[in-house]
Length: 332
Ligand code: UT7
Image (cartoon, rainbow, N blue to C red; front, side, top):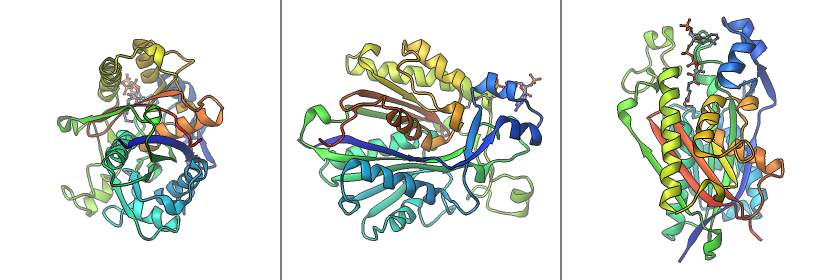
């Protein structure tokens, strides 16, 4: 039997910082309000000439190096992004492959918003377990600043830019195997978070430009309530399915949207501050990149060791949601 092992994590954190004080200058807000309502203190902003593929390629290089494989051993690249370099084509995964110097392999994007990295992990696992691929590079890369309306004071201060990546490889050792990845969606909630213009429903036009319809629109408060409920329920199902309790989890890595959501979910699940990874204060919400950036942060702090059990928990536009349970299994 072939299993899929989570071998390495990497990230790229843009160096430019945008603080809450910077937002005080452009929208009617305060550092105090943003901190109290979200826990966010600052977020990273990509350079003008940096697109999602640039961020993703940098994160990928680090993940490949840490996996101890040569880049030529990669046989599939999956990039999760809702801020691709180009609206329709080519895919950001193809551009990342080119930047890595890999011209001849399968590469594609997936669109599952903030749940994208967990969806990518699920696809990588399936490709490996079926025997079709051996080393899959999965990436979450976002330049949300490219779809923000800086006059929308209810949304623009939450998001930031960044990328995270991981190598998922075939193994015959069951103890290294990703235990489960469970993903789901409900398109009935499409109106909660969306970019209403620029696609086939409302193609690019003067109206789309004038009304900034290609920028993200979010019904924050409704989304907040569903996020807490769904993220909590999702983990309960995952733990019950595998006869595990919160005691069995070493690192809980939820999507980083809002500290109040993270805290409410962690409290409901009995996963306290010692187990929960929080980076929303530093990076804001980086959508598909948020979970791998958070895992990379904990890894670089020395918190995540070989064999530790990690639990991902994601939620985002679609709506989409998903969780993943696995031992961190770097190559020995
Ligand atoms: O990543 C995908 C999933 N996304 C999420 O999970 C995001 C979930 N939502 C949230 O994190 C929160 O809903 C927000 C942080 C976006 C907003 O916080 P909230 O506590 O839900 O605020 P609200 O929208 O209910 O607004 C409360 C008040 C309003 O004023 P009134 O009507 O009570 O007088 C807003 O006008 O806060 C006001 N407000 C602000 N005040 C200062 C909204 N934005 C701001 C702001 N600064 N930036």
